[in-house]
Image 1 (spheres, rainbow, N blue to C red):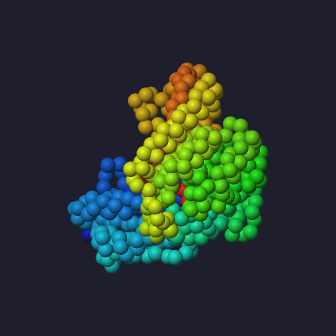
Image 2: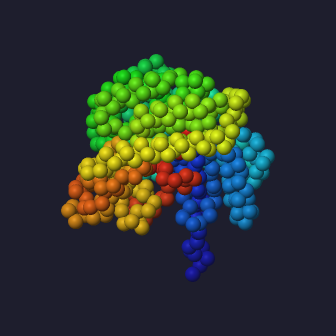
Image 3: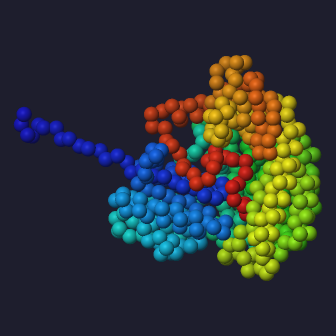
Length: 505
């Protein structure tokens, strides 16, 4: 055969692979969904489980005192891995990157890209620049240029989604570094939020969580104090949207129009996560929390009057500078009266750059630890008691994916009740037609309560197959089903009921 007619043989190189490791609050999880979307839009592919990614992205948190050590420890572990994999790249973004900037490349010179909270959309370009120039690229912006929700997205869940309504925070809590790293609050227009919600529902999503660092302050930028309650009611008009949640509101701005919107909008779920932080008015004043314990308890009273089955959860910090035993007892008193369904409790973590870091009377660690133990025990006791009251009740659950760590061993599945309690239920489908998929809805009877979950052993009483279950099946049955975001914390990605780090709300 003449050489001129010989077919040329071309070899397509496989796409470079990525892994995103996420630490911190829901806003970081939301940003990581955008980072994965950007990388896939740029031609990268999620690294198969167990394989080393070509690009590893750390989306960091700066809330905790040991955040720096955790990051540099992880970067240290990757240094020899990178040396053994020519062409591998490491990128660091998020709040710690916004705070530390050039320090990261000084302490870990094998890092290729450092980017901040305001320019996550630059990641693919910065990776390419670093590759071509063969030197680290550091780009930190001081203000938001592109709202993250406008960027390409690779969502972790097919049936539930975060929808950001705002970024940043206008509060000045003395323990919180987030406002200095995320900036002042910037709100999306209501039409943009609703357009995203409607697009998600069209894709099969049936549960959305409205997200903001101070979500009920939404509207401050365009001057509408009732914008958030109006948004909740507007979500109630979206056909096919079955569950609406939001996190995290600030007690100082929690108004009666929001309570009314929650109670009167059928698809707004009877669950509320509202950070208390302390039950002591003196400590709240030192924290610059612009409410007092009586106002907090008054909000809870009004919410429960409007929605008797509402489950209320919270964040509490133990050992804030100057906290006395009397202050701590005031926190215990509020916990007893509020009867939280669960609480995230934190030992105060000193953060350089926050006003609280320079306050006198830092509480000794041994005292903080002892108080923390007492608080955790009380929270568990009350949560367990509240859970026991549901034994014998029939609950409607949205079946979840990957929330029950022991499900394979116990032969149970897991789901979320309307009030967001986690329920593990027996995989007995003898009374229903078929097996539920994540996103489908089942009815079960609660048979046992534990402090952090409920159990429903016995046959599933009813099964409703949903568009969300269809979406999950389409997503997971295809030959190129992506693996999603590799998270550095447990069971986050599908909107979870509580934040894993102290909220700035």
